[in-house]
Image (cartoon, rainbow, N blue to C red; front, side):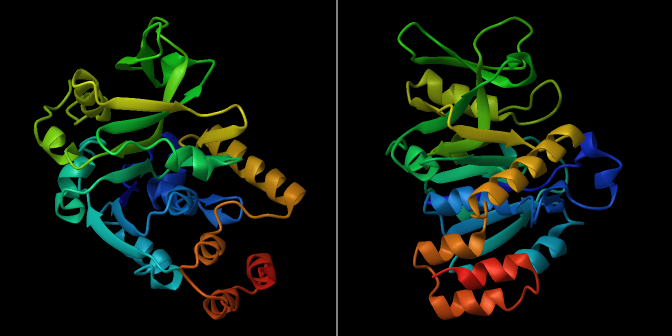
Length: 284
């Protein structure tokens, strides 16, 4: 299974912070923001990644992540030169996907919780699409999933003005190999973008969408504005200080998956003359 991480856009909700740097490169406590979505896909077993970003930021992501060999994974890169919507990722990534299934995640979404890896992997279908929802108090700020009395998906609505449900669609999606065909058949919305909701609703129309309601023990953090970015940093800081375990530590995940060995982990630890390096050095 392949993975796509969306790290483009203008980050306009964070201006002026993001006028000169990609939002996904901003720090969330002790790591770059993009570490967290990458870690989510790594936990789900993804080793082949496509990072989609802007022409200006491409070299910055390459400098940060390289080719992925230090983690036992592969990072490829593609440019989205203009924000054309989330579904555009499947057109940009058509050659990368080569008709295979994929997990796609937004580069500003952070997921954390007990058994998150199991929640993701155990729910994925062999065919069709799968989304992950989270109960929220203000569903009019999100895309929300409408379900029937038997909890079967009916439709996804983008920021509905009237209450439909409180199941917000998070920025983590699974699609089978047909997603590129759906994306190529999608027409731009009124705002001129290829909407991910159109892709999801296409799968619903064919009866091929399933979903997981993330448990109350899980955290879903969207870091797209100053308040949520600050909240996410504080959440990561508190959890790491209380547990002594780092969240979104790519090297640790790679080692736990046996994608790198102890010598490679120790080599990575030597790169950091700080708490992060000391943490890696303590891992056995």
